[in-house]
Amino acid sequence: MPTTLTTHENLLDAITVDDGHPIYDPANGELIGKTKMSKPQDVDAAVAKAKAAQQSWGALSPAERSEYLHKAADAVKASAEALAQILAREVGKPLNGPNARFEAGACEAWLRANADFSLEDEVLVDDESGKAVLSYVPLGVVGAIGPWNWPMMISVWQLAPSLRMGNTVILKPSEHTPLSVQALVAVLNQVLPEDVLQVVPGAGDIGQAVSEHPDIDKIMFTGSTTTGQAIMRSAAADLKRLTLELGGNDAGIVLDDINIEEMAEDIFWGAFINTGQTCAALKRLYVPAAIYDELVQALGKIAAETPMGQGVSEENVLGPLQNEAQRNIVADLVEEARKAGATIVTGGNPTADEAGYFYPATIVADIDQQNPLVQIEQFGPALPIVKYDNLDQAIEWANELEVGLGSSVWSSDEQRAREVANRLIAGTTWINKHGAVDPRVPFGGVKKSGMGLEFGVEGLKQVAQPKVTSY
Ligand code: NDP
Image 1: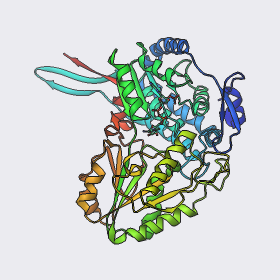
Image 2: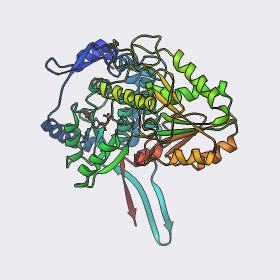
Image 3: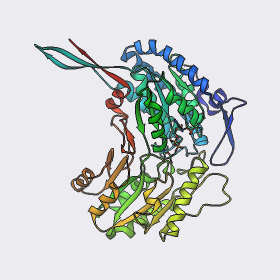
Image 4: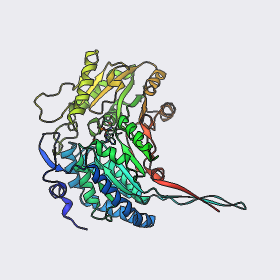
Protein backbone atom coordinates (compact mmCIF):
# COMPACT_ATOMS: atom_id res chain seq x y z
CA MET A 1 0.00 0.00 0.00
CA PRO A 2 1.36 3.52 -0.80
CA THR A 3 2.44 5.30 2.35
CA THR A 4 2.55 8.93 1.25
CA LEU A 5 -0.71 9.83 2.97
CA THR A 6 0.49 9.20 6.49
CA THR A 7 1.24 12.80 7.45
CA HIS A 8 -1.41 15.51 7.65
CA GLU A 9 0.73 17.80 5.47
CA ASN A 10 0.85 15.21 2.66
CA LEU A 11 -2.84 14.48 3.01
CA LEU A 12 -3.81 18.16 2.93
CA ASP A 13 -1.51 18.68 -0.10
CA ALA A 14 -3.23 15.79 -1.86
CA ILE A 15 -6.74 17.23 -1.46
CA THR A 16 -6.33 21.01 -1.39
CA VAL A 17 -6.96 23.00 -4.60
CA ASP A 18 -5.23 26.35 -5.19
CA ASP A 19 -8.32 28.28 -6.23
CA GLY A 20 -10.60 26.49 -3.75
CA HIS A 21 -12.69 27.76 -0.86
CA PRO A 22 -10.53 28.50 2.22
CA ILE A 23 -11.09 26.51 5.40
CA TYR A 24 -9.87 27.89 8.75
CA ASP A 25 -9.05 26.33 12.12
CA PRO A 26 -11.97 27.28 14.43
CA ALA A 27 -9.56 27.48 17.38
CA ASN A 28 -7.32 30.21 15.95
CA GLY A 29 -8.46 31.32 12.49
CA GLU A 30 -5.41 29.87 10.71
CA LEU A 31 -5.86 28.75 7.11
CA ILE A 32 -5.57 24.96 6.93
CA GLY A 33 -6.44 24.27 3.27
CA LYS A 34 -8.65 25.10 0.32
CA THR A 35 -11.45 22.85 -0.78
CA LYS A 36 -12.96 22.14 -4.14
CA MET A 37 -16.61 23.32 -4.30
CA SER A 38 -18.67 21.05 -6.54
CA LYS A 39 -21.25 22.20 -9.04
CA PRO A 40 -24.49 20.32 -9.78
CA GLN A 41 -22.92 18.91 -12.98
CA ASP A 42 -20.15 17.38 -10.82
CA VAL A 43 -22.87 15.48 -8.97
CA ASP A 44 -24.22 14.20 -12.32
CA ALA A 45 -20.74 13.06 -13.37
CA ALA A 46 -20.08 11.36 -10.01
CA VAL A 47 -23.44 9.55 -10.10
CA ALA A 48 -22.80 8.28 -13.65
CA LYS A 49 -19.42 6.87 -12.57
CA ALA A 50 -20.89 5.41 -9.36
CA LYS A 51 -23.66 3.72 -11.33
CA ALA A 52 -21.18 2.17 -13.75
CA ALA A 53 -18.81 1.05 -10.96
CA GLN A 54 -21.68 -0.53 -9.01
CA GLN A 55 -22.04 -3.25 -11.65
CA SER A 56 -18.73 -4.91 -10.87
CA TRP A 57 -18.69 -3.95 -7.15
CA GLY A 58 -22.17 -5.41 -6.63
CA ALA A 59 -21.13 -8.57 -8.45
CA LEU A 60 -18.34 -9.33 -5.95
CA SER A 61 -19.13 -11.83 -3.22
CA PRO A 62 -19.76 -10.50 0.32
CA ALA A 63 -16.46 -12.10 1.35
CA GLU A 64 -14.58 -10.21 -1.36
CA ARG A 65 -16.15 -6.91 -0.35
CA SER A 66 -15.38 -7.64 3.31
CA GLU A 67 -11.76 -8.13 2.35
CA TYR A 68 -11.77 -4.67 0.78
CA LEU A 69 -13.26 -3.20 3.97
CA HIS A 70 -10.49 -4.78 6.05
CA LYS A 71 -7.91 -3.30 3.65
CA ALA A 72 -9.67 0.06 4.04
CA ALA A 73 -9.42 -0.33 7.82
CA ASP A 74 -5.70 -1.08 7.47
CA ALA A 75 -5.29 2.10 5.41
CA VAL A 76 -7.10 4.16 8.06
CA LYS A 77 -4.88 2.62 10.74
CA ALA A 78 -1.73 3.55 8.79
CA SER A 79 -2.94 7.16 8.43
CA ALA A 80 -4.74 7.45 11.78
CA GLU A 81 -2.50 10.14 13.24
CA ALA A 82 -2.62 12.21 10.03
CA LEU A 83 -6.43 11.97 9.99
CA ALA A 84 -6.62 12.95 13.67
CA GLN A 85 -4.37 15.96 13.04
CA ILE A 86 -6.74 17.13 10.28
CA LEU A 87 -9.79 16.69 12.54
CA ALA A 88 -8.02 18.66 15.26
CA ARG A 89 -7.50 21.55 12.82
CA GLU A 90 -10.74 21.53 10.87
CA VAL A 91 -13.31 20.55 13.53
CA GLY A 92 -11.17 22.01 16.32
CA LYS A 93 -11.56 18.89 18.46
CA PRO A 94 -8.59 18.08 20.68
CA LEU A 95 -6.33 15.18 19.76
CA ASN A 96 -6.90 13.53 23.15
CA GLY A 97 -9.99 12.61 25.16
CA PRO A 98 -13.11 11.37 23.29
CA ASN A 99 -12.10 13.49 20.32
CA ALA A 100 -9.83 13.39 17.22
CA ARG A 101 -7.70 10.27 17.83
CA PHE A 102 -10.78 8.52 19.19
CA GLU A 103 -12.66 9.43 15.98
CA ALA A 104 -9.91 8.08 13.71
CA GLY A 105 -9.89 4.88 15.78
CA ALA A 106 -13.67 4.58 15.47
CA CYS A 107 -13.39 4.78 11.67
CA GLU A 108 -11.15 1.72 11.69
CA ALA A 109 -13.41 -0.11 14.17
CA TRP A 110 -16.62 0.49 12.18
CA LEU A 111 -14.97 -0.62 8.92
CA ARG A 112 -13.81 -3.87 10.52
CA ALA A 113 -17.13 -4.54 12.25
CA ASN A 114 -19.07 -4.06 9.02
CA ALA A 115 -16.63 -6.34 7.23
CA ASP A 116 -17.25 -9.10 9.77
CA PHE A 117 -21.06 -9.05 10.19
CA SER A 118 -22.78 -12.08 8.77
CA LEU A 119 -26.02 -11.64 6.81
CA GLU A 120 -27.13 -14.95 5.34
CA ASP A 121 -30.18 -15.68 3.20
CA GLU A 122 -33.18 -16.62 5.36
CA VAL A 123 -35.23 -19.67 4.42
CA LEU A 124 -38.75 -18.56 5.42
CA VAL A 125 -40.70 -21.54 4.16
CA ASP A 126 -39.45 -25.01 3.32
CA ASP A 127 -42.27 -27.58 3.34
CA GLU A 128 -44.61 -29.48 1.05
CA SER A 129 -46.05 -26.15 -0.23
CA GLY A 130 -42.62 -25.06 -1.56
CA LYS A 131 -39.80 -22.79 -0.55
CA ALA A 132 -39.43 -19.06 0.10
CA VAL A 133 -36.04 -17.44 0.63
CA LEU A 134 -35.34 -13.87 1.74
CA SER A 135 -32.06 -12.37 0.57
CA TYR A 136 -30.57 -8.88 0.51
CA VAL A 137 -29.37 -7.45 -2.78
CA PRO A 138 -27.65 -4.08 -3.44
CA LEU A 139 -29.79 -0.96 -3.84
CA GLY A 140 -27.42 0.73 -6.31
CA VAL A 141 -25.94 4.15 -5.53
CA VAL A 142 -26.13 5.54 -1.98
CA GLY A 143 -25.91 9.29 -1.39
CA ALA A 144 -24.48 10.01 2.07
CA ILE A 145 -24.92 13.52 3.45
CA GLY A 146 -23.17 14.35 6.69
CA PRO A 147 -22.63 16.99 9.39
CA TRP A 148 -19.56 18.76 10.76
CA ASN A 149 -19.32 17.38 14.31
CA TRP A 150 -17.94 13.87 13.66
CA PRO A 151 -17.28 14.19 9.91
CA MET A 152 -15.05 11.15 9.40
CA MET A 153 -16.78 8.78 11.81
CA ILE A 154 -20.28 9.54 10.54
CA SER A 155 -19.07 9.17 6.92
CA VAL A 156 -17.78 5.70 7.82
CA TRP A 157 -21.09 4.88 9.56
CA GLN A 158 -22.71 5.59 6.19
CA LEU A 159 -20.20 4.20 3.71
CA ALA A 160 -19.06 1.01 5.45
CA PRO A 161 -22.44 -0.84 5.48
CA SER A 162 -23.33 0.59 2.06
CA LEU A 163 -20.14 -0.72 0.45
CA ARG A 164 -20.38 -4.01 2.28
CA MET A 165 -23.84 -4.59 0.78
CA GLY A 166 -22.63 -3.94 -2.78
CA ASN A 167 -23.65 -0.32 -3.28
CA THR A 168 -21.38 2.44 -4.48
CA VAL A 169 -21.31 5.65 -2.43
CA ILE A 170 -21.22 9.39 -3.00
CA LEU A 171 -20.45 11.46 0.10
CA LYS A 172 -21.57 15.07 0.53
CA PRO A 173 -19.70 16.50 3.52
CA SER A 174 -20.75 19.58 5.46
CA GLU A 175 -19.36 22.77 3.96
CA HIS A 176 -17.75 23.38 7.38
CA THR A 177 -15.64 20.20 7.33
CA PRO A 178 -14.99 19.17 3.70
CA LEU A 179 -11.25 18.55 4.15
CA SER A 180 -11.74 15.89 6.84
CA VAL A 181 -14.04 13.85 4.60
CA GLN A 182 -11.87 14.30 1.50
CA ALA A 183 -8.82 13.22 3.51
CA LEU A 184 -10.65 10.10 4.68
CA VAL A 185 -11.74 9.30 1.12
CA ALA A 186 -8.18 9.81 -0.19
CA VAL A 187 -6.96 7.28 2.38
CA LEU A 188 -9.71 4.75 1.61
CA ASN A 189 -9.30 5.13 -2.14
CA GLN A 190 -5.73 3.89 -1.92
CA VAL A 191 -7.27 0.42 -1.64
CA LEU A 192 -10.84 0.60 -3.02
CA PRO A 193 -11.62 0.08 -6.73
CA GLU A 194 -12.07 3.24 -8.80
CA ASP A 195 -15.37 5.16 -8.46
CA VAL A 196 -16.78 2.90 -5.77
CA LEU A 197 -16.42 5.76 -3.26
CA GLN A 198 -16.54 9.43 -4.33
CA VAL A 199 -16.95 12.77 -2.58
CA VAL A 200 -18.69 15.92 -3.82
CA PRO A 201 -17.68 18.74 -1.46
CA GLY A 202 -20.02 21.72 -1.56
CA ALA A 203 -22.78 23.56 0.24
CA GLY A 204 -26.45 22.72 0.86
CA ASP A 205 -27.35 23.04 -2.83
CA ILE A 206 -25.07 20.10 -3.57
CA GLY A 207 -26.77 18.11 -0.79
CA GLN A 208 -30.06 18.94 -2.43
CA ALA A 209 -28.74 17.88 -5.86
CA VAL A 210 -27.71 14.54 -4.32
CA SER A 211 -31.05 14.01 -2.60
CA GLU A 212 -32.98 14.85 -5.79
CA HIS A 213 -30.84 12.85 -8.21
CA PRO A 214 -32.93 10.21 -10.01
CA ASP A 215 -30.04 7.72 -10.20
CA ILE A 216 -29.37 7.76 -6.47
CA ASP A 217 -31.34 4.99 -4.81
CA LYS A 218 -30.92 5.71 -1.12
CA ILE A 219 -30.01 8.70 1.06
CA MET A 220 -28.27 8.27 4.37
CA PHE A 221 -28.44 11.58 6.19
CA THR A 222 -27.14 12.81 9.52
CA GLY A 223 -27.85 16.40 10.53
CA SER A 224 -30.67 18.67 11.63
CA THR A 225 -34.37 17.76 11.67
CA THR A 226 -35.17 20.68 9.34
CA THR A 227 -32.75 19.47 6.66
CA GLY A 228 -33.98 15.90 7.16
CA GLN A 229 -37.49 17.09 6.37
CA ALA A 230 -36.25 18.89 3.22
CA ILE A 231 -34.46 15.72 2.11
CA MET A 232 -37.60 13.67 2.66
CA ARG A 233 -39.48 16.04 0.36
CA SER A 234 -36.70 15.88 -2.29
CA ALA A 235 -36.62 12.10 -2.10
CA ALA A 236 -40.37 11.74 -2.55
CA ALA A 237 -40.32 12.03 -6.34
CA ASP A 238 -38.36 8.78 -6.75
CA LEU A 239 -39.47 7.17 -3.49
CA LYS A 240 -35.81 7.00 -2.49
CA ARG A 241 -35.04 4.91 0.56
CA LEU A 242 -34.03 7.03 3.54
CA THR A 243 -32.12 6.68 6.75
CA LEU A 244 -32.42 9.91 8.74
CA GLU A 245 -30.27 10.44 11.83
CA LEU A 246 -31.44 13.80 13.13
CA GLY A 247 -31.03 16.07 16.09
CA GLY A 248 -31.88 15.11 19.63
CA ASN A 249 -32.20 16.71 23.02
CA ASP A 250 -31.31 13.75 25.19
CA ALA A 251 -32.48 13.66 28.79
CA GLY A 252 -30.58 12.01 31.63
CA ILE A 253 -32.45 11.12 34.82
CA VAL A 254 -30.43 10.70 37.99
CA LEU A 255 -31.98 8.59 40.77
CA ASP A 256 -31.41 9.42 44.42
CA ASP A 257 -29.19 6.40 45.12
CA ILE A 258 -26.17 7.27 42.97
CA ASN A 259 -22.63 7.47 44.24
CA ILE A 260 -21.83 11.01 43.15
CA GLU A 261 -18.08 10.63 43.49
CA GLU A 262 -18.11 7.56 41.23
CA MET A 263 -20.59 8.77 38.61
CA ALA A 264 -20.08 12.53 38.23
CA GLU A 265 -17.20 12.19 35.78
CA ASP A 266 -19.19 9.84 33.51
CA ILE A 267 -22.20 12.15 33.61
CA PHE A 268 -19.93 15.06 32.67
CA TRP A 269 -18.48 13.24 29.64
CA GLY A 270 -21.93 12.06 28.59
CA ALA A 271 -22.75 15.74 28.13
CA PHE A 272 -19.42 17.25 27.10
CA ILE A 273 -18.11 14.65 24.63
CA ASN A 274 -16.74 16.55 21.61
CA THR A 275 -17.39 19.75 23.61
CA GLY A 276 -21.12 18.97 23.56
CA GLN A 277 -21.34 18.81 19.75
CA THR A 278 -22.71 15.29 19.54
CA CYS A 279 -26.13 14.14 18.41
CA ALA A 280 -26.58 11.65 21.24
CA ALA A 281 -24.98 13.65 24.05
CA LEU A 282 -26.72 14.25 27.36
CA LYS A 283 -28.31 17.67 26.85
CA ARG A 284 -30.56 18.11 29.91
CA LEU A 285 -30.10 16.50 33.30
CA TYR A 286 -32.85 15.81 35.85
CA VAL A 287 -31.64 15.46 39.45
CA PRO A 288 -33.64 14.74 42.64
CA ALA A 289 -33.80 17.54 45.21
CA ALA A 290 -32.10 15.40 47.88
CA ILE A 291 -28.77 15.27 46.03
CA TYR A 292 -29.18 18.28 43.72
CA ASP A 293 -26.72 20.71 45.30
CA GLU A 294 -24.04 18.08 45.78
CA LEU A 295 -24.17 16.82 42.16
CA VAL A 296 -24.36 20.35 40.73
CA GLN A 297 -21.23 21.31 42.68
CA ALA A 298 -19.41 18.15 41.59
CA LEU A 299 -20.22 18.75 37.91
CA GLY A 300 -19.29 22.42 38.22
CA LYS A 301 -15.90 21.47 39.64
CA ILE A 302 -15.19 19.01 36.82
CA ALA A 303 -16.27 21.57 34.19
CA ALA A 304 -13.99 24.22 35.68
CA GLU A 305 -11.00 21.88 35.88
CA THR A 306 -11.23 20.21 32.45
CA PRO A 307 -8.68 21.74 30.06
CA MET A 308 -10.11 23.53 27.01
CA GLY A 309 -8.02 25.01 24.21
CA GLN A 310 -6.43 24.51 20.78
CA GLY A 311 -7.23 21.14 19.23
CA VAL A 312 -3.60 20.46 18.34
CA SER A 313 -2.30 20.90 21.92
CA GLU A 314 -1.86 17.57 23.66
CA GLU A 315 -3.10 18.77 27.08
CA ASN A 316 -6.62 19.79 26.01
CA VAL A 317 -9.70 17.59 26.03
CA LEU A 318 -12.30 20.28 25.26
CA GLY A 319 -12.04 22.54 22.21
CA PRO A 320 -13.85 25.39 20.47
CA LEU A 321 -17.25 25.19 18.82
CA GLN A 322 -16.74 24.25 15.19
CA ASN A 323 -18.35 27.39 13.78
CA GLU A 324 -19.49 30.83 14.80
CA ALA A 325 -23.21 30.17 14.30
CA GLN A 326 -23.13 27.22 16.73
CA ARG A 327 -21.13 29.23 19.25
CA ASN A 328 -23.76 31.98 19.10
CA ILE A 329 -26.60 29.48 19.63
CA VAL A 330 -24.94 28.27 22.85
CA ALA A 331 -24.09 31.78 24.06
CA ASP A 332 -27.63 33.06 23.41
CA LEU A 333 -29.29 30.13 25.18
CA VAL A 334 -27.09 30.54 28.28
CA GLU A 335 -27.73 34.29 28.31
CA GLU A 336 -31.46 33.73 28.13
CA ALA A 337 -31.25 31.25 31.01
CA ARG A 338 -29.26 33.74 33.09
CA LYS A 339 -31.84 36.46 32.42
CA ALA A 340 -34.62 34.09 33.48
CA GLY A 341 -32.94 33.68 36.87
CA ALA A 342 -30.96 30.46 36.42
CA THR A 343 -27.66 30.08 38.28
CA ILE A 344 -24.51 29.86 36.14
CA VAL A 345 -22.46 27.57 38.35
CA THR A 346 -19.38 27.45 36.12
CA GLY A 347 -18.54 29.08 32.79
CA GLY A 348 -21.02 31.30 31.01
CA ASN A 349 -18.55 34.11 30.41
CA PRO A 350 -16.68 33.69 27.11
CA THR A 351 -13.44 35.66 26.77
CA ALA A 352 -14.04 38.48 24.31
CA ASP A 353 -10.50 38.54 22.88
CA GLU A 354 -10.36 34.80 22.12
CA ALA A 355 -9.29 34.20 18.49
CA GLY A 356 -11.42 31.08 18.08
CA TYR A 357 -15.05 30.10 18.61
CA PHE A 358 -14.55 29.11 22.23
CA TYR A 359 -17.30 28.91 24.81
CA PRO A 360 -16.38 27.75 28.32
CA ALA A 361 -17.73 24.49 29.77
CA THR A 362 -20.88 25.76 31.49
CA ILE A 363 -23.11 24.25 34.16
CA VAL A 364 -26.50 25.90 34.62
CA ALA A 365 -28.59 25.17 37.73
CA ASP A 366 -31.94 26.33 39.16
CA ILE A 367 -33.47 26.25 35.70
CA ASP A 368 -37.07 25.45 34.74
CA GLN A 369 -38.25 22.77 32.33
CA GLN A 370 -39.76 25.47 30.09
CA ASN A 371 -36.51 27.42 29.71
CA PRO A 372 -35.18 27.43 26.09
CA LEU A 373 -31.83 25.96 27.23
CA VAL A 374 -33.81 22.87 28.29
CA GLN A 375 -36.32 22.84 25.43
CA ILE A 376 -33.93 23.54 22.51
CA GLU A 377 -30.91 21.45 21.54
CA GLN A 378 -27.86 23.54 22.50
CA PHE A 379 -25.30 21.33 20.68
CA GLY A 380 -22.44 22.75 22.71
CA PRO A 381 -20.75 22.90 26.13
CA ALA A 382 -23.62 24.09 28.35
CA LEU A 383 -25.56 21.64 30.50
CA PRO A 384 -28.86 22.65 32.17
CA ILE A 385 -29.64 20.77 35.39
CA VAL A 386 -33.32 20.66 36.41
CA LYS A 387 -34.34 19.77 39.97
CA TYR A 388 -37.18 17.30 40.51
CA ASP A 389 -39.16 16.22 43.57
CA ASN A 390 -41.10 13.45 41.95
CA LEU A 391 -39.73 10.78 39.58
CA ASP A 392 -42.96 10.59 37.55
CA GLN A 393 -42.65 14.30 36.86
CA ALA A 394 -39.02 13.88 35.72
CA ILE A 395 -40.02 11.07 33.34
CA GLU A 396 -42.83 13.21 31.94
CA TRP A 397 -40.39 16.10 31.36
CA ALA A 398 -37.89 13.77 29.72
CA ASN A 399 -40.54 12.44 27.32
CA GLU A 400 -42.45 15.58 26.44
CA LEU A 401 -40.22 16.98 23.65
CA GLU A 402 -40.70 16.26 19.96
CA VAL A 403 -37.34 14.44 19.69
CA GLY A 404 -36.13 11.10 21.03
CA LEU A 405 -32.64 10.03 20.03
CA GLY A 406 -31.01 8.83 23.27
CA SER A 407 -31.63 9.07 27.01
CA SER A 408 -30.04 7.77 30.19
CA VAL A 409 -30.78 6.69 33.74
CA TRP A 410 -28.17 6.92 36.49
CA SER A 411 -28.57 4.68 39.54
CA SER A 412 -26.72 2.22 41.73
CA ASP A 413 -29.73 -0.12 41.54
CA GLU A 414 -29.94 -1.87 38.17
CA GLN A 415 -33.54 -3.00 38.67
CA ARG A 416 -34.77 0.51 39.49
CA ALA A 417 -32.80 1.92 36.58
CA ARG A 418 -34.31 -0.59 34.16
CA GLU A 419 -37.83 0.23 35.31
CA VAL A 420 -37.25 3.91 34.58
CA ALA A 421 -35.48 3.08 31.29
CA ASN A 422 -38.58 1.17 30.14
CA ARG A 423 -40.64 4.34 30.55
CA LEU A 424 -38.35 6.63 28.52
CA ILE A 425 -39.25 7.32 24.89
CA ALA A 426 -36.02 7.25 22.86
CA GLY A 427 -34.20 5.07 20.34
CA THR A 428 -31.62 4.11 22.97
CA THR A 429 -31.66 4.37 26.76
CA TRP A 430 -28.30 3.93 28.42
CA ILE A 431 -27.87 3.02 32.08
CA ASN A 432 -24.97 4.70 33.90
CA LYS A 433 -23.49 5.94 30.61
CA HIS A 434 -24.66 8.15 27.77
CA GLY A 435 -23.93 8.17 24.04
CA ALA A 436 -21.82 5.01 24.13
CA VAL A 437 -22.39 3.71 20.60
CA ASP A 438 -21.13 0.32 19.47
CA PRO A 439 -20.83 -0.89 15.85
CA ARG A 440 -22.65 -4.13 16.79
CA VAL A 441 -25.66 -2.41 18.41
CA PRO A 442 -28.40 -0.78 16.29
CA PHE A 443 -28.77 2.97 16.78
CA GLY A 444 -31.52 5.33 15.62
CA GLY A 445 -34.02 7.92 16.78
CA VAL A 446 -37.76 8.05 17.38
CA LYS A 447 -40.16 10.94 16.81
CA LYS A 448 -38.39 13.86 15.06
CA SER A 449 -34.95 12.38 15.77
CA GLY A 450 -35.16 10.33 12.62
CA MET A 451 -36.04 7.06 11.02
CA GLY A 452 -34.21 3.85 10.29
CA LEU A 453 -31.37 2.18 12.12
CA GLU A 454 -27.63 2.22 11.70
CA PHE A 455 -25.03 -0.34 12.89
CA GLY A 456 -25.07 -4.08 13.28
CA VAL A 457 -26.80 -6.52 10.95
CA GLU A 458 -29.91 -4.29 11.10
CA GLY A 459 -27.79 -1.50 9.63
CA LEU A 460 -26.72 -3.74 6.73
CA LYS A 461 -30.35 -4.54 5.94
CA GLN A 462 -31.15 -0.84 5.63
CA VAL A 463 -28.71 -0.33 2.76
CA ALA A 464 -29.98 -3.36 0.84
CA GLN A 465 -33.10 -4.34 -1.03
CA PRO A 466 -34.95 -7.28 0.56
CA LYS A 467 -35.67 -9.78 -2.20
CA VAL A 468 -37.91 -12.82 -1.87
CA THR A 469 -37.53 -15.83 -4.11
CA SER A 470 -40.46 -18.19 -3.92
CA TYR A 471 -40.67 -21.57 -5.66
P1 NDP B 1 -27.59 20.60 8.63
O1 NDP B 1 -28.76 19.72 8.70
O2 NDP B 1 -27.77 22.03 8.30
O3 NDP B 1 -26.53 20.02 7.59
C1 NDP B 1 -26.18 18.65 7.49
C2 NDP B 1 -25.79 18.34 6.05
O4 NDP B 1 -26.89 18.56 5.15
C3 NDP B 1 -24.68 19.24 5.54
O5 NDP B 1 -23.82 18.49 4.71
C4 NDP B 1 -25.45 20.27 4.76
O6 NDP B 1 -24.67 20.95 3.83
C5 NDP B 1 -26.50 19.41 4.09
N1 NDP B 1 -27.67 20.15 3.59
C6 NDP B 1 -28.07 21.39 3.90
N2 NDP B 1 -29.23 21.68 3.23
C7 NDP B 1 -29.54 20.59 2.49
C8 NDP B 1 -30.62 20.26 1.62
N3 NDP B 1 -31.62 21.09 1.38
N4 NDP B 1 -30.62 19.02 1.05
C9 NDP B 1 -29.65 18.13 1.31
N5 NDP B 1 -28.60 18.40 2.13
C10 NDP B 1 -28.55 19.61 2.72
O7 NDP B 1 -26.86 20.46 10.00
P2 NDP B 1 -25.65 21.32 10.53
O8 NDP B 1 -24.44 20.54 10.20
O9 NDP B 1 -25.64 22.74 10.08
O10 NDP B 1 -25.99 21.34 12.06
C11 NDP B 1 -27.13 22.05 12.53
C12 NDP B 1 -27.85 21.27 13.57
O11 NDP B 1 -28.05 19.91 13.17
C13 NDP B 1 -27.11 21.15 14.88
O12 NDP B 1 -27.30 22.30 15.65
C14 NDP B 1 -27.76 19.91 15.46
O13 NDP B 1 -29.00 20.25 16.01
C15 NDP B 1 -28.03 19.06 14.28
N6 NDP B 1 -27.01 18.08 14.07
C16 NDP B 1 -27.29 16.80 14.37
C17 NDP B 1 -26.34 15.86 14.19
C18 NDP B 1 -26.56 14.44 14.47
O14 NDP B 1 -25.56 13.71 14.51
N7 NDP B 1 -27.79 13.95 14.65
C19 NDP B 1 -25.01 16.20 13.72
C20 NDP B 1 -24.83 17.58 13.40
C21 NDP B 1 -25.82 18.46 13.57
P3 NDP B 1 -23.94 22.31 4.29
O15 NDP B 1 -23.37 22.11 5.66
O16 NDP B 1 -22.88 22.45 3.31
O17 NDP B 1 -25.02 23.34 4.29
